[in-house]
Image 1 (cartoon, rainbow, N blue to C red):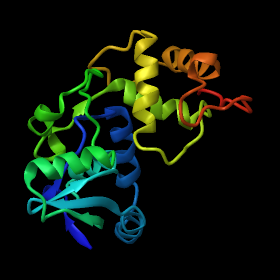
Image 2 (image 1 turned 90 degrees about the vertical axis):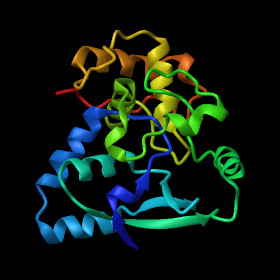
Image 3 (image 1 turned 90 degrees about the horizontal axis):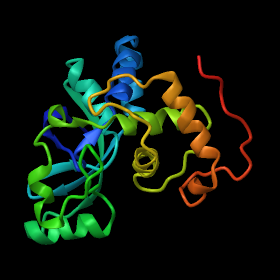
Length: 207
């Protein structure tokens, strides 16, 4: 099903702007037919509730599309919770781990306040540079991609606690910061995180 990006509601407060910018560059290089096929192959999973569509993944992609003026994306409705009251809807979203209740600096948001913290549109998503760092670390072989909710945010929290001196408004992750993060991926402190590699098979060269 194709819908306007403007109709989609975020279920998290922040994304990594560096990764959004990379997706902008990727989408910009595609011609019309390639772009259509790419978007069809990257359907946005959504939950229907209260007459709205709440995206539970692909926030970076949708923000990139919005920045490029791409009006429509393809969605896959995973559940229809329209019959629930607003409170029960958000309670169900929490139980199913469809929402990420932390802000752009990693501070927890109480359940009762969470809906008020969400932007009404992808354009209102905030920047969490540690989320960008987590995405870069995975791409460089620091940990494996696994289908566990908010894996990258869990790694972002791990890196944030290590105090890697990433500026709150950073749009680009410095190479030295990425190298430090990859070293942390090797440490025993990361052993409980999803995608952790017991035997670090390889770390891609940082160029």
